[in-house]
Image (cartoon, rainbow, N blue to C red; front, side, top):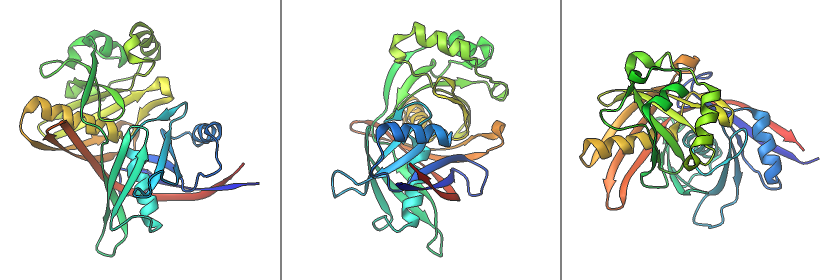
Length: 295
């Protein structure tokens, strides 16, 4: 009976039982797509990764990312966590890892402490900022169980945006953020009415105080009622805010997961380049469990 080893880590935290948990299957050769999806559902984390040999030997791995119901083209905490796991196995090259993914090539810089122990990683999102549809404030408020005047539209309307995977980003009043609660019926209705969403609605709400941000992310249609740390959405938000604020570079500190009892800290840097706005997102990573699946 084949055995497939895995490790779990808590990402965007420096201690166990915080941040966003992730399962990493460190050698997924021999697993079918159906088995990968079933394992991701069984692990029941927001995402699970499967490490395969790279198609290009210049890269370090092909990493596939699955949430509970589908495969993802890119995601933040799975890349940070997978990089930390592989680096602890000595699979980085001078502190750098390059992962092939559906959305493009993801380059990761591994972070270590003075003793050489892996403490975290910083990933570069694979795409420049792009936009999809804007959504009415009242519809987003209804999705999150908020009042319309809790949605702040002075800087931008609720908007679908991506640096590799799509989120709807919406600024909310600071005092309203903690009270947000996803309404599954409204999520389903909005997806039915808006074909441009292509069946996906991951809602990233944020309250801003300068470069410091508090955030929450809801994706109940994908099985994630709330996510404790969403690196790809944070990277998208950083690029969006830089595009609105002006300038060539910006740095943001984002706190997420507080309401879930899994506080997470994400650090985002965004820059303007010739082809648009790009972001990096990084943070710490705490090792948790090891095991194997027998299939």
